[in-house]
Image (cartoon, rainbow, N blue to C red; front, side):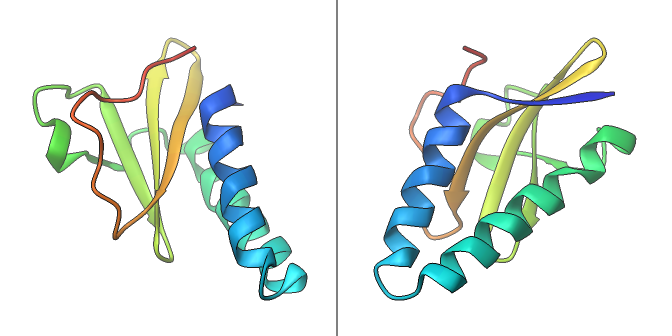
Length: 100
C-alpha cells in the first residue's frame, strides 16, 4: 500500500518542527523522525488505527497515536493518505480533515 502525506499534514509537521526547534533543533528533528517512522506501519497495516472519536460519523477516518501526537489518515483504494498531525491536547476542528 502507498503512503501519501497531504499538504496540510506536511504543513503540520513543519509547524511542529518550528515550535519544538525553538528550544532544541535536535529534539525537533528526532520528533519529526519518530512521527514519520510511526506512520510507516500504515503501509502494511492500514486498518491498525482507531476511528477518531471526535468524528464518529466518519468511519473512514482513522488515527494512530505517536507519543503526544495523533496522526490522522484515510485509506482510499491502494493508498493511505495522512491528513493531519495534531497534538493530543489540541481540540480538533468541527469539520474533519479532507484529502487535498
